[in-house]
Figure 1 (cartoon, rainbow, N blue to C red):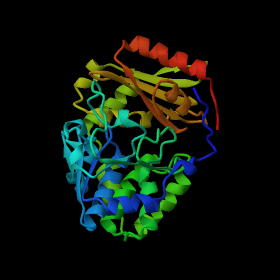
Figure 2: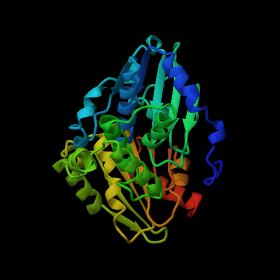
Figure 3: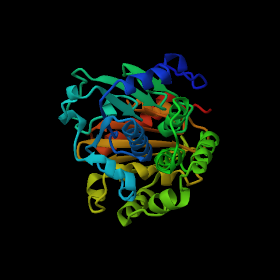
Figure 4: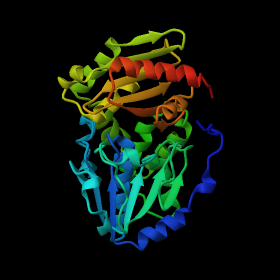
Length: 343
C-alpha cells in the first residue's frame, strides 16, 4: 500500500473553481446522486449545489437509491432528492454534467454493488470531495482533504464564484459541516467552527434547523442499535482497540437502513478505554465496517488496506459477504500488519 503524505494536500492535482463554474454555467441538465448510505454531508452538499444551480436557471436532478437515516428524513430540503432511484438506472447521456459530491471513488456511487457502474455517455464528470483517498475519477476534480466536509469545500467554491449566501443555502451547508466534524469534535473542528460561524451569520439556524431535528431526534430503532453495539463490545488489550460485531439477524428487528447503521460507530468513540474503535455490521450482501480514532491513531490506513478509505479520525470499508468470524479475523490481522501510526 502506497504511503500517503498526510501533511501534504494535493491541491496541485485540482482544477480551479473557475473551471468548474464555467463548465456548470455552460450546461443545461445536471445530474447528482447521494452516496451509498447517505449522510449529512452528502445530503447537504447535493441539495446546496442544486439550489445554487437552479438559481441560475439549470435543470438539476438528485437521486438516491438508499434512504436517509430516520432523523434526517424530516429536513425540509430532503424533498429535493428522488429516493429509491439508483444512478445506474438512469440514461446519463441525457445530462450535460454529472456532479459527484462527497464520493471518494465510484464504488460509493451506486447501491447496486453487484453491478459495475460505468460512466458511459456524453456526460462530463465533476468530482468535488474532501477525502484524502479520493481517486480523482472526474474530468474535472477538486479535492481538499484538510476541509472538515465537502460542504466546507463548497463554501470556498461559492465564495469564490460570488454566490449569495441566504438562510436556506446556509442551512444545507451547515448540516454537512456539523455532522462530518462530529458536531465540532474532530481534528478539523477549528475550520468547521469558522465555517459554521460564517453560515450562522448568513442565516443558518443551528438549533432549530439542525440540532433539534437531527441530533436530538433519533429514532427508537437507532438508539436500540447503539445499545446493541455497546452490548456486543469486545476489547483487544494488545491493540488497545474496542470493537463491536452485529449480525444481520440482530438488526432486522430495529427496522433501520444503511444510513442509520453508519451513525452507530460515532457512539463507540465516547468510551474512554480504547485508542480507537471499529464495528462490523452484517447487511444483506456486504459487511459494513467503520473506524473511529480516539487517541491520535490514523485509522484511514486500516481502511485503505481493507479496500476502503476516509480520514485519519474516521474511515470506512466494505467486505464481500463472508462469515462475521472471518471478517473479525481479517480486520484484526490487517490492523496488526499495518501497525499503529499516530499523527
